[in-house]
Image (cartoon, rainbow, N blue to C red; front, side, top):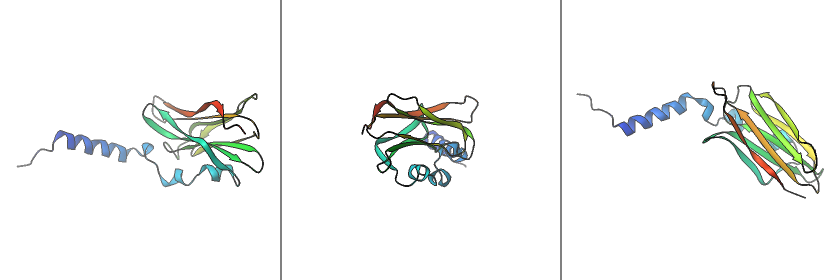
Length: 152
C-alpha cells in the first residue's frame, strides 16, 4: 500500500519544482559576474541609498545601482538583471541631474543596461531602471529613486 503525501508537502514540492524548472526567477553565476563597479569602471563606488530592486508585483527581476566617482565628479547608473538573464529583454538605466534632461540607455540586453554617466559634482540626481520578462504578458519590473538626492 502506498501512503499519500500530505497536500502541504506536495504543494511545497511542486512549488520548489516550478522554481527549479524556471531559471528566470533564480539568481545565477552569469548575472553575478557583472557588478555595478565593474560595469561603471575604476573609481566608481555605490552611494548610500544607491541600490533599488526592480519589482513587478512581488517578483524581483534585477537591481538598479547609483555609483559616484569622487575623482571626476561623475555619477553612473547601471541596471543588472537577475531574471531572464541570457535572454535579450528590454532593459533600461536612466540618470537625471536636477535641472537637466534624463540620459537613458535602453534596448534589448542579456545582462545589463548602462553604464549611464553624467557629471554631477555639487548637483542632485535621480535614477531609475526597468526590465521586462519574456512571458506573454511582458510584465515590466521597475525601480529606482525619482526624487532628487545624493547632492554633492
